[in-house]
Picture 1 (tube, rainbow, N blue to C red):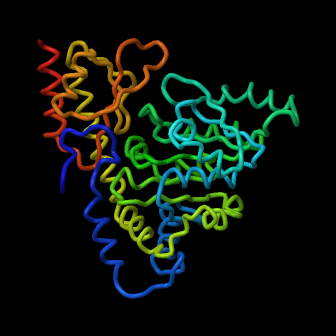
Picture 2 (cartoon, one colour):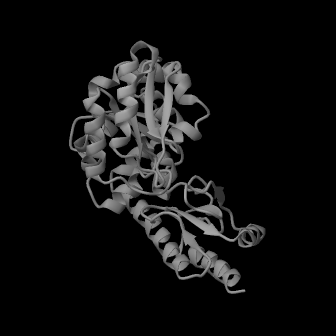
Length: 353
């Protein structure tokens, strides 16, 4: 297994887990029915229903962008509004895909410093929309990112409170779970507790960042809301003919707990890195480290030196109340303690000069 070495830029830079590659190879035998009518995809539906402790409808897709965009397209009409955090991936990193696939729905971002919105933030915009009537986009969907774009994690109680507030206004609840495994590993809860038992109607379950080669899934807990998804997926060009290769990845990811083992390791490496950073002068963690992302204020000269030495990471906009240069560091399932310690040693060397 190759490690990430000096690349802390993203958990998208990793290789796939060997178990996932083995599953693809095992599925590469013989002829099977196409477009999802194969034993692997049928087995995935049963597995997901068992895992989430309720009967679900699950659709494998290849990317997180299309998972979010198509899920939101069945929850939100073209004249609808999607409420999310202002830093949510659907608002900042998906090149208008949610707006495109919904046919023009409006995304409305809500600000907080830690990436987590709270129920009280929904009251004013939703009441305003009601009062404005036909002149305003119709509130349709609340989208939550778990873990958030700031590396923080919603608890089941927090998701439940937000879902209750959304449902009270007739909104559906969507969860962007590109790093759901990292959140569950942090919380120690069950997949059911953080999703449908807390009011989530549709989940985009990420796997690519956490060990898959290219596999995501849209999971509907309120199965009535899945109407039209199959046709939308086909129209978007995301119905794989050889679906078994997507489903085989997701089975390997979920069946024997690989997703949580990988996430626990990534989280542990983030915690190791956070512990080392907090011991150094001139370094500030912007957010509590709960999953596998760290946001760190560093001197500009240190950032330049680390980049020159081959370490890779991304600069990040500082949240309100934080001054200085912020970088994002991401650990992954194949980050090693040696990788973390090498980065800490380089930072420590610069901090003590």
